Length: 218
Image 1 (cartoon, rainbow, N blue to C red):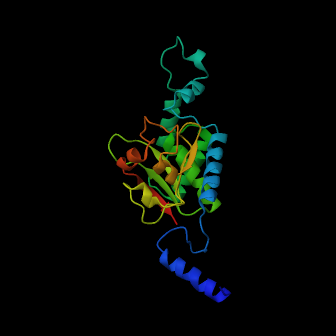
Image 2: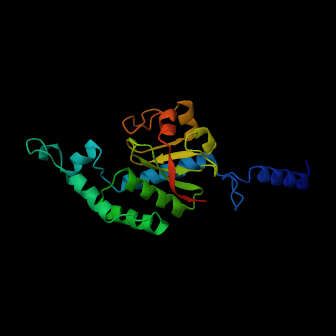
Image 3: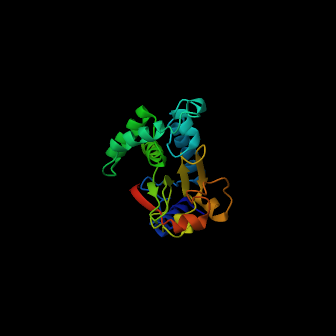
C-alpha cells in the first residue's frame, strides 16, 4: 500500500468513526491502556491527600482519632461533620471552575465522600488533558454513587454498558482503596471486589442505576 493510499484509508476510518471519541480533533487514539494508567494516577492523587469519608467505617475511626476514642464514648461523627462542612462550601452548579474550587477545598479539609473524591479525580484528569471525560452519578431511586468515566463514546447509553466503547474506563477513588478498570471487563464479569452495597458490582446493577453524566468534556 502506498503512503497516499494509507492516508486515504485512515481518513475513511476516521470518517466512519467520526461520532466516536477515540478519534479526537488532535487525531489521537485514546487507548484503553492510557486511560487506565491515567485513571490510576488520579486515584493515587486522591489517596495521597488522606481524604476521609463519613460513609466508610475505617475513615470514621481515623477522623475520631482511633478506636479508643470511640469505644466507651458513644457515637462520634467527626467525619460526618467534616463532610457536611465540605458540602456547605461546595458545588452549586457543575462547572469546571466550581469543581476546581471544591477540589481545592477538600485538599484543605481532608473530608469527602464519593462525590468530593470523584471531583478531585476529575479535575486531576482534566488538567492532564485527558479527553473525553465525564463526572458520573446514578439516577435511579435507591442508588447513591459518583465516579469518573474516561473515554466513553459520545453516544453512550445509560442502560447499555456495551455502548460505552472499548476504551471506556471507570475511575473511582472512593471504592475500597480506589478502583480503576475497563468497563468492558465489568460487562464480562471479570472485575472483582466491587461495592455491592452501593450496587456497583455487576453490569446489570450499574445499568439499572441509569448513570448520568453531570458534566462532559470532549
